[in-house]
Image (cartoon, rainbow, N blue to C red; front, side, top):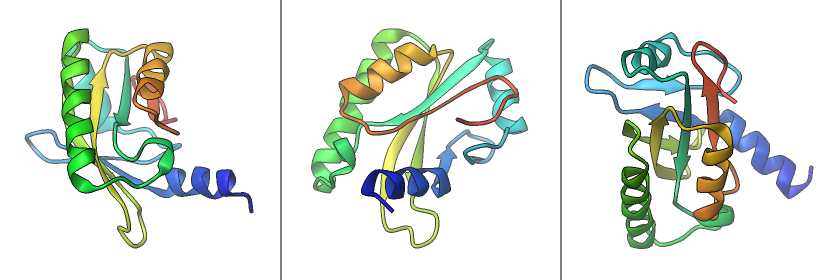
Length: 134
């Protein structure tokens, strides 16, 4: 299996947690999340993006650098003016990697991809209200 294929499989298996106040919402690639659909609908959003600024290009960085990059992502998303909430991405089996992440409500797919590229990310999650996580 190529390194790219292995990474894609790892991202597809990963656990993606959105830290809503009532209780966390867990996202899984290929599955719809009724809880996320409700959260989006409450904000009048039809789509979302879930992304990180950590470990650009899937190359591990020191924790302090990843924390700095996450603060930059939060600031950058703040300039967009869309509702956002924190979360975490982690490797599903061993928890071998964890990344602070951000769910942004209402962010168009193309803008989400551009933002992920701006932060050197190899992957992100996107989706539409009521649809599966992609």
